[in-house]
Structures are given as structure tokens and as C-alpha cells.
Length: 333
Ligand SMILES: Nc1ncnc2c1ncn2[C@@H]1O[C@H](COP(=O)(O)OP(=O)(O)O)[C@@H](O)[C@H]1O
Ligand SMILES: [Mg+2]
Image 1 (cartoon, helix red, strand yellow):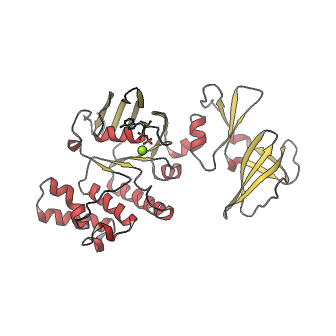
Image 2 (image 1 turned 90 degrees about the vertical axis):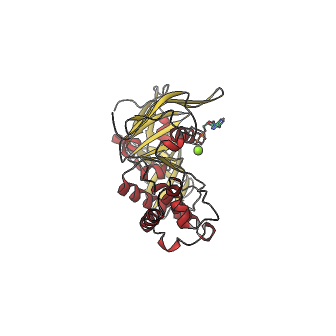
Image 3 (image 1 turned 30 degrees about the vertical axis):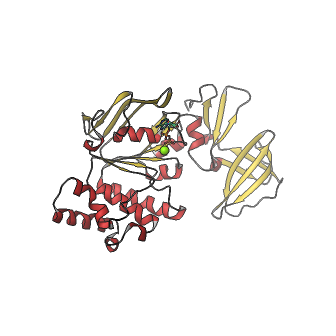
């Protein structure tokens, strides 16, 4: 039996609504897995099922080789961090962090030692005597992480833990979290609808839609070899261009960075008109219209085009993705 966390055909229904449909995933010990998908696709339900807060209708959950499907939440040796970090408002930061050990009846000296250790690791040492309301959002989220870590659980489950933070702090915390998970080497399932978070954090990403896993793969493969048009369109910003090939049953996909642009006519390239140019500082996004086709291209910094200016474009031939229009599945290269 393997280490890590294993989900075997998990299904969860609410009445007739199937929130999670036959999800199988295996996460190795120490692996950082991100569940990525749009709102309502079943991410939180799956996480809550693993935590023991919901009972699955079908399927088996194994942790470190043991079947925990029907075990009480508190006996699963899993720590969960939510979007709202729910600290105890009247307890100090030190008491908040130490609380899981207090509940487990550990001695005061041991708790103090562990709190100090974990706080140092998360840069919270100077805040231990404060109350939660005296901390910033980022600091409070670090306290919530410290409280999860102090138990040294066999698995971490995190449900959009950074989504209440402002954009800049979110990016900072993302790096901290990744480094911390690397040090702790505890298998982590992290839920987000933010594809940038998924790409940057994960060893492997499970892309979900309507309760089902669409692709379970490395960030690089999810990006460079999306399994279907849903994954192709969901991962990457701006999205992959998806274009119906009128002569066949194929949908073509091309990333904006794989669209070549020219201000002058090139033989074999397609003529288009600039619809809009978006200056990003480090690059420029150029949206083109070619007949009924709308294509977004990524151009170098400062490549400015007038509205309606004529341009020529082509798709880099070795970068074209092909999908079956009926099934939406990726076609062999
Ligand atoms: N307790 C519940 N009762 C009924 N339906 C629920 C419950 N929890 C979630 N759902 C439904 O299950 C689906 C998946 O929800 P959820 O897991 O919260 O999605 P996500 O976290 O991906 O946004 C949604 O359609 C949601 O309305
Ligand atoms: Mg959710």
C-alpha cells in the first residue's frame, strides 16, 4: 500500500445533485497537489469529504495506506485551512497556535516549545502576545497555517486560503507557502479557482469541471498538453485561442505567445485588423479580427498598433494544439 493520499472513485451527492463524480487521485507523500476549477465544480465538497466533514456516497479514501473513509474527522490526522481563518478572538496568537496541542492534552512546556518553533518558522515570533484583531490579514493567515502545522498532520487540506488577501500579499504568501510545504514535506491538497496559483504551487494539478477531474498532470503538461478544450481554455492568461477549423471536425488551439505578428504582408500569413491593443508594461496583448475569427496575440513590450490597423499573423506551426470538436479531447500530435 502506498504512502500519501489516495482517492478511489469518490462520489458525493446532495439530493439528486452530484457534486463530485467518481474522482480518483493519488498524491505521493510530500506532494503538493492543487485542485483547480471554476466555482461550483466540487472542489470544496471533495476537500470536505477527505477531511471527514462530509461522507462520500461511494468510494474509498486512503491516507498513508490506511482506509480512513469512515473515520471521524478528528481521528484522520489531517489539518485543514480555510479561506476564513477563524482565529479565537480572545486568545493570544500564542494560545491560538498552541490550541490543537492543548486539546490533545500535551504538557504546557512542550506546547510553549512547539509554539515558539512554529512561530519562528512563519515569522510570527514578535506577535505571539498580540490578539488576532491587532494583526493584518496576511499575519492572521500565517497564524492559521501555524495552527495547522503544529500538529504535524499526515496531510494538509487548504481551501482557497489566500483568496481573502489583496493581490500583492497573495503572491507573497504563495511563495512562503510553497517554500514551507517543501520544508515540511507533508502531502497537501490545495483548492483554488486561480490558475496562476495552481501553476506556481503545484507539483501536480487536478483540473476539475462539474465534479469530474479533466486532467491530472504536472503544471507544464497541463499548460503545454491540455487534455481537452476546457483545460486549454481554463489554464493560461490570456486564454488559449480556440478556433473551429471550418474544413474539418477539428478545433485548433494556439496560445497568444505562439501567434506571430507582422506589420507588413508575409506570404502565407493571414491578414487581420487590430481590434484593440492592451499595453501591459512587460508585453503587449493585441486582439485581432480576421473575418469572423478573433485572435489574441502576445507581442513585445511597446509594440503599439492603431485601432483597425492592418496586420498579418500566423500560428507557429509546431505550437498548434488540435482537439476533436465532438468530444473536445486532444488529438494525437
Ligand atoms: N451542503 C450542500 N447542499 C447542497 N448542495 C451543495 C452543498 N454543498 C455544495 N453543494 C453543491 O455542490 C456543488 C459543488 O459545490 P462546491 O464543492 O462548493 O464547489 P467549489 O468549491 O468548486 O466552488 C455546487 O453545485 C453546490 O451548490
Ligand atoms: Mg469552494
